[in-house]
Image (tube, rainbow, N blue to C red; front, side):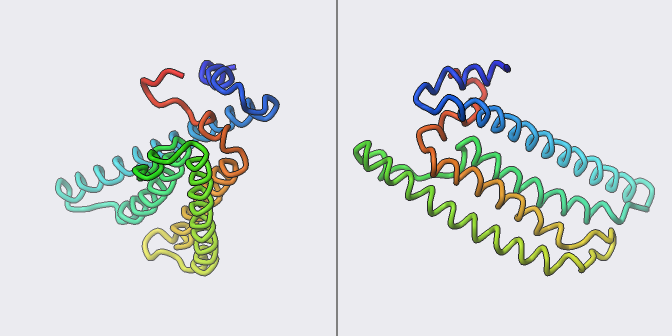
Length: 187
């Protein structure tokens, strides 16, 4: 068992033991996979754009596909980053009202906010699914990649966010304890 998983197991004694450990490991695995994917996409974007700039200014040529691929990768990095932020509880939140409420009211408000976020995510999921299907047969002019790949990023993000938010809605006490510790944070 990894050191982070041991920390999570010790940090949440109130969560159902049989379900907590696998979800904590899945959360860690998903975050590492998303981070690796984003790093690879960013490195690819840097290489593509840098190489294209050198070729254009140094040799009066270029890689025509680099602009389209960079655009596709940027969209995917944006959506995967949003999933990672949600997973780590690092998304934007305004807590002015919630901090002034008593603990039971905060719990109800937290579930209500999670429910609204889930509703928005399901709308993203539905819209992205429809746009992916609608644009899959349209090919981008230079690379020939289906335009639906843009919308597939939203679809994947919608699925992952819906799973995360559904879990938080069903198990609000365990949801914060499965968030991976932030850098420099001790559990």
